[in-house]
Picture 1 (cartoon, rainbow, N blue to C red):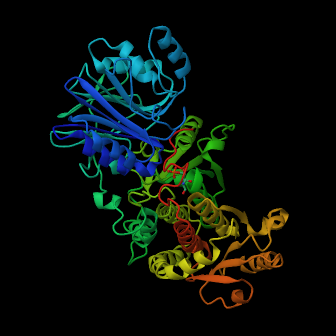
Picture 2: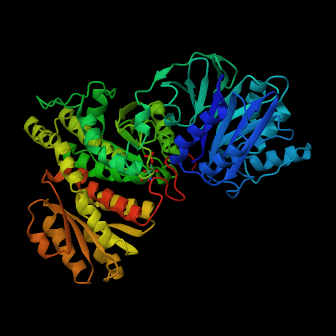
Length: 609
Ligand code: M6R
């Protein structure tokens, strides 16, 4: 989705804005632009296309100035083109705005402003903002912004500069994230932490409808009623290196190869590796909540929804608590049947997915306690949930999630073992047994990653197919869904994930020799059932690639290709079986020349409904 960067200080703004925009590229965008204020004049440069195009434009004539705003646009209202790109200005180029979100009542506002003599040139909802602020301006930019945001409906994160008030940036947010970065004699603004990490780790998270007036020496933040607020300065423990490719061809590949490390990070501080004891003391979830709850709902979108589905198997198996899983976008519009005996777990890597935020608010209204699993400290979901468990993935830049998926699974394992312990659903020897396997997972992941050359070879053999079926059963069914999603989102090849046992109720009609099938078939309790399903597939002349357990000789005689993963407990297989599927999708997409880290039409975090 759109990205915002802002700078005010004594350095030239353009290089900082460009650097920030590059760090925001991963969010997904179709056009980019900057605005720089100097000597009571604002210069805007913007264009459709990649940031490198904007850079070329700027090389020809670089605006000078120490205050500026930058934006990457992901089109919602109006096609991606030069005119619709941000920043947008009012009638006299005196007020300039960048905006993330959607102004839902922009049509009546636009008509009113046109009747008052304002001239519009784009098709965007955003353009009403500079005109509105311009019409509300009476010697104070902050007051004009405050008055204007009272008139708008929808979601917004905005950065505003004006020739009338040339020493400040005025910013506000509602529904879209915005972060203020604190430097020495300089201040920054960004929609996302990675854009700030080259300059500062000290940030302030703006809350809904707060307005900040930023000068080079600091920020004064007020609420929508004008009351001055004392905001907490948060130190972010991510560093700049984490947002670099570090020699890898793509962020996605780097992130897959970080999986061993992030799994260890999740074990650290949560499981004592020598005593195997669970140590979740800093999880602020009250013990009586864990013992009292009668049902858990897990809500999420996209890949996070697939970890939620795996979570159902994990929690039900280990704790005996009934689990319901839903897409946030579906849940939010249904009759909500939650109450005080329910726990809601929200899973969101970014913590900013609009549908998951809306689901959170609906659950809160219904009286359910909310536990969030998220990667981003200070994100909306982390701030609005009752308790948070951080998934400790570090910044994930590749649009297709990989390491965060693994980390979400890790958190679900640890959390459900903790619930099982507190509720005495399992005895300590059973818990110890699973923990002993869980702590071996990092070495097993290393073994899988060392086998990357085998996956490269497999991807070469399969890359010319146009359709794939991914099958899994039980806890590996969500992994089939995730494997198919990975392939389709980065290679644009059609892939369908299905429960292996359900395949004969429909999808089997699709199968022939042009439609290969990837089957997750570890030696678990449903192995023989999956083998039967594979035979049904093979009877249709379909090429089958199996993800199987090391040492399984039987499967070689049934399928066409096998990739082996180490042996582990039935319940832990997803964390291993998903890795070859991530690598398989990556190498196919890379070989096909796709933009792996920034697939078309996709955004890293979907901050609009
Ligand atoms: O940040 P979130 O976990 O809430 O994001 C949810 C989905 O948008 C995300 O998982 C999406 O499906 C990714 N493209 C998957 O690779």
